[in-house]
Image (cartoon, rainbow, N blue to C red):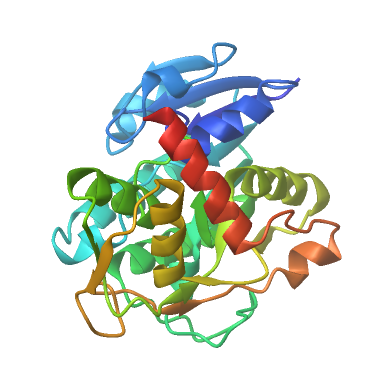
Length: 305
């Protein structure tokens, strides 16, 4: 039985991953609980509250670890324009510390959750070999920097890596993004819903169950030094359509207003659709469309409130 360390294992994606891994692996979760919740951590996993920005504080937890699933990050893409330091410390520095702890403790494998934001304003559907990569947000730049660090450690120190470039991942336990934002706004004012941008932004949304199955499938079925895979759905849905679905599931008919402009915020990419052909070539396909994922995620989040 392998020993797996999951950083960010109390968060949205990390906790769902832990739920799957504990069935046949020994799992240790490191999380500072700044974004995650202790009750999300599966009772069969070990848990340590720790901040990844201090190498000295985390290094001993890497003893006898076989694989690290590095999920911990600052997940707020738009925050980088307001707090430029947060993605540097919580994404780049944290990833460097994880890699250093791995190097010093002899841990050979890392799986890392990256993002579609590394591509910037790319052609769609976007394949993994698209370039040049020109992120539009500091968040995207930080994820790309993490990918570069991981690649360099793999080639310098004989490690192996699985890098997942996510579309928008949604579902139970999610507390940020367009769906929770719309729900919160409508609970405050059910008569009007403010939509960022012009509402015509079209993006891919992937349900959490599809995401986790893709992560594990790629990890188990690829063996390059650095394995990079897009994970998402095969279609898109607009911000306005999501607003209509959220309103409908809440039994409301609000007026829609818009902040205007093609982008919803500084660094936004108004059109995003990842090619998942590479995942298809190794036998994984998404179960749900973007609209199905959105409908299920709305039900999940409303049921949790």
